[in-house]
Image 1 (tube, rainbow, N blue to C red):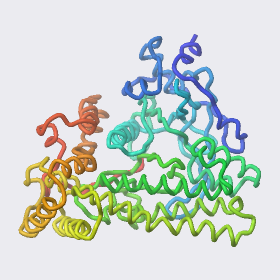
Image 2 (image 1 turned 60 degrees about the vertical axis):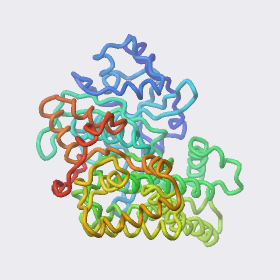
Image 3 (image 1 turned 135 degrees about the vertical axis):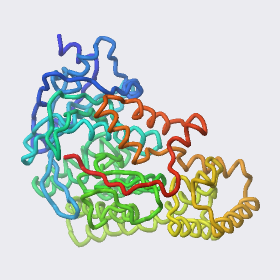
Image 4 (image 1 turned 90 degrees about the vertical axis):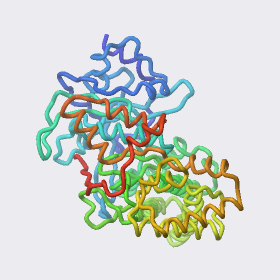
Length: 485
């Protein structure tokens, strides 16, 4: 009966399991005794064509906690390696289990993964569990990122397991249902290159191309075309992060998705005061993954990917290195062009020409010198916020006069305000508000603020709502984030 009920939820078609058991370990989730659904993403469920009409809340919690294995599922923990803070190590899903790949009615394929579902062969001494706070945080941030137009994993549900989790203190345990186009990462290619034979590496590349980039499958050099395609996806992703002031915090190669989706929302945060050196992660003591370093780290990660592909790019290693380097060498210039264009749109200028770049440079210099809030500065400029939200001084007034004169001579107000509106979020999930929402949820089982933040990011309905989610200059405390593992 349970399996029949579960069958009505997912339409599994498990292609990853056909790669062979070198790429994964078959393992079932740890069965929680009393799972309790605390968050359910009805909008995402609808997009996935999930029908839960035959399930009550307890049955749904059983499916999404691993207590009940859905029919058609092939539970597995994926093998991968990765460079963590620059150092190579063997990894794998130590606290996550892929239930299977769900096909929507249109044929779109999505991984359905349970995060925090217990030990696997890759747990490396860990307990394989996740805290309620960490899973609520990932649900909140990932759904906000989606609302902000950033490619990202999605969160379908959070289920409390009823089992305690020991970290710095004892926490409630929970499982997140994460949805992605796949969980293939640079680290998966590192694993294949390091531990598997050439035929397995070739098969895996072909599989990944068919799944993510079928349009390049007829290229004469598919490995090189693949590197170019992944590089384009990563560049676009980092531009989106920089646009909204997002800092991932742990850009290890095992957290770099081949398809250019943001995932693994551990020590991530949103920049308040504009400073390219901003770091929130408590473990990033050297600033490796600071806001301004993210483009360089993306290129570093891409170079690692290129290294795994060399044997398939060309049998002659020197020639393969040359071909790969030619692709990687395009990243810096392509990024510079894309970043300039994106940042100019934030001040209403469609073309990053000489005067536009001069204005942009002047504004960013002023923001850094005055410690102005990144999000608020652009909202004040577009008239969405009153000027009390940034430190107005004579330098800013003079800059604004130059900006307004240039705008009047090049475009009309309606056009540039529309451009600014499309590229400047009205609301981002402010760090202190996120922590408050998590405190309320974990300590008082009050999820109202968490839902309010997601709703506000999706569509702030009034100036009053907008002001609720902003910070006044000088009110930001020192803020640190933690991985939660």
